Each structure stands twice: as structure tokens, then as C-alpha cells.
Image (cartoon, rainbow, N blue to C red; front, side):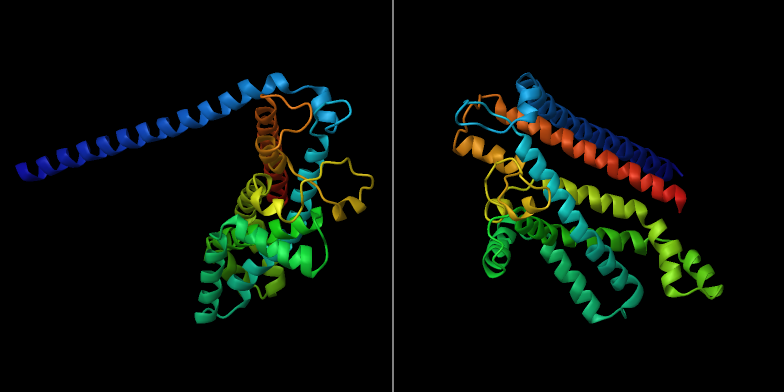
Length: 290
């Protein structure tokens, strides 16, 4: 009897110790994160003004603005998502709903996980050889968008697949017992129930797209001219905010100050948070309709 009480006391002490260590680790991580964000915002916000946000860098006037880079970043994200979402969600549906489970499907899943861990510079090299050279796209936003789409495709497929596999089997069984078609099952049950996972995939993809620079240096180029045409701009070279942030440390653009890199980093955080908020809002709307 006494040994049982002693074991319970030891177990409680272990649980308390584990909870305490987890709380300390969480507070350390949170403090570091808040410290980094606060430092960037404090250093960057004084350099942000209307002219900084609405003009392009000018050698003649010796002024610096980031409007072309903001436009290029939005172009990259939108085009890449338009490419990767249909392919990624379709691939996840095939792996879970249509394919016969076996060695071949397991090989596909293993390959997807490997592709998700490949360094971005390797994707940049592939994009430079395949899109820029072989397809003769040159350094362009379209070549960079295709490269980003390939980079984020494994994340979209894997995250969506996990979300689909987590759906309660009773939903499927009830639908099948009613004699509905596979397409109707996917449209009315599988996809609406997978919305949270799809939103997670989109948010992760946006974060990687906006924060990418290595792959874009060799595919989209480093130009920061204002677009002359809405449609033709995709065929032109264009630097994103992260590429321009890298250039701030390698070659100092005209009119740039020591606070400019921090200002660009602050704008990047605002863009990512805004896109994530809009994505969650749209996903919540679709979920309510479903």
C-alpha cells in the first residue's frame, strides 16, 4: 500500500517538473520571438513613410522606395498559389481517395517528404536551368513563380493529405450508404472538412514564398522597375522584398539608410500577417457555407 502511494507521489512530482520545464521553454521561445519582432519594429518603423511605400529607388534623386518590390512580392504569391493549390489539393485527393494503397503510393509519399526538405538553392538551380534557360523565360516573375510553386507543392500535398486522412470515417460510410458518387462525396464532405488543413497549407506556403530569396535570385532576377503593364509584368525581371533585403547588405542602393533593411523586414511581417489573416477569413467563410 505504501509503495503505491509513493509511486503516485513520484508520478505527480514528475508531472509537475515536466509542466514547469515546458512552461519555461515556452516562455524562453516566446521572449526570444517578441524580442526579435520588437527590435525589428523599433528599428524599422521610423524609416517607414508614405514616400518609402509608394515610390521606386531613384539614382537621380538619390531616394529609396519599395513599391516595385511590394508589387513583385504580391505577384509571386498570387501566381504561385494559383499554380500550386489545384495541383497540390488534387494530388492529395488522388493519394487518399483514388489510388490503391501500396508500395507505389508509399514511394510517392516518401518522395514528397524528401522534396519538402531539399534546400531552396537547389530549387533555384533547377528553376534557372529549366524555366529560365530551357523554356527561355529569362529572369522573370513567371519563372520565379513556377519555381516557388514547385518548392511549396510538397508542403501543400502533405498537409492536405493529413487533413483528409483525419476526417471521421463515419462521414464517408454514411455518404456511401446513401449511394452518392465519389465526386459528390469529395465535393460535399471531403473538401469542406479539409478546409482547416488546406488553410494551414496555404499559410505555410505563403510564409515560405514571401521569405524566399535564394531561389529567386537565379530565376526572377533583381530588377526593381515599376511595372508598365499589369499582364506583361510577369515576363519581366522583378525583385521581391526578401531579394531586395539581401541586396541591401551586398550593394547599397541609392538613398538607403542603416534603418532601411529593418523597415523592409517590418513591411514583410505586415504583409505575411495580412495575407494569413485574409486566408483564414476566406477559409472560415467557406467552412461556414460547408
